[in-house]
Length: 388
Ligand SMILES: *[C@@H]1O[C@H](CO)[C@@H](O)[C@H](O)[C@H]1NC(C)=O
Ligand SMILES: *[C@@H]1O[C@H](CO)[C@@H](O)[C@H](O)[C@H]1NC(C)=O
Ligand SMILES: *[C@@H]1O[C@H](CO)[C@@H](O)[C@H](O)[C@H]1NC(C)=O
Image 1: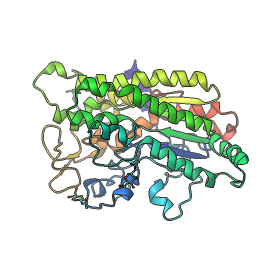
Image 2 (image 1 turned 90 degrees about the vertical axis):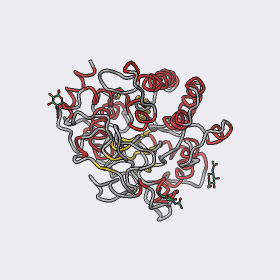
Image 3 (image 1 turned 180 degrees about the vertical axis):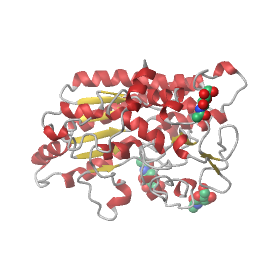
Image 4 (image 1 turned 90 degrees about the horizontal axis):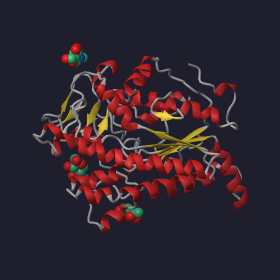
């Protein structure tokens, strides 16, 4: 069923502007799947692999802090909605950036749970101590400047609600890193599984907080199939063929873990929909999108070596933790546009484009983002109809 649906949407020419006028702004939270320069700004280490080419080679022609060869899912969504690519909040606020049409708070390496949760358990995050709570705090700090009359607190809240009701909120992806660190640090699967309800509850509170601030359309992605990333495939490689999915070649136990998180998240979103019937809460199925691509790579324009990273340090999956993409000695595929996976944990621009298409028009979001627009009667106008 997913394959048939995938075939249907890949045949559509993906229009540059799908639903212009739908939303006046986008606010984005999350981790490296959505970061477009925040970690680069925090880290300031311009010799780190991701701060160097070939990151950015396909679209920007320079590294931007995005963990890909080009645009992210978020970038394609902004383009399709007729909005500019979002400013990275940390990078742009120091130069007095304009956030009228949105801001991106996502930081690569961020977790949903606060950094203290991991510190208490002696789980290390070498990239950042930013969590979803920190990103939401930045958003709350920015919000008054986006609302018209910041003098009086009551009218401030009303004005901000007006501002946010026309916004699209992209809530992630977030949560993947909460598991990636402990799994790589060889914590038992049982222990890591016990984090899932806390991660889901944290995402749920963030969604609730944004709805209370006036948000009306929120897209909440699930996590990717962890067992399909070359970092995991390399680290947990086995001789046992039963550990691998025959169709995709991904590691079953890790994909089952992703499915566990995603099913709890989906159930929680269903509860939230009941509590907030005036809000549209979209589940974005990154997992199904990626599996669908891996099962039908040629149909989407990809080659057959789907699980081999385009950029990495060699080996079966072109991944080596000691030779990062962008650092000395990495190897690069000939055609990034024919590769699904970019580096150990991230996807190519080509993959992002397809996922974004499946979120905007379906089948990987329900309701599809372009349709969710029509559900917002306040925003809705004749210009906000889907053109294709
Ligand atoms: C910057 O990144 C490079 C490459 O990862 C690393 O060797 C170096 O130690 C880093 N420098 C600092 C100051 O963190
Ligand atoms: C994160 O680290 C920065 C710099 O080391 C520090 O200033 C900040 O207070 C920390 N934040 C949290 C939430 O731990
Ligand atoms: C992928 O493999 C299939 C089956 O072996 C083959 O028919 C197809 O031509 C291959 N596609 C590419 C792009 O190599």
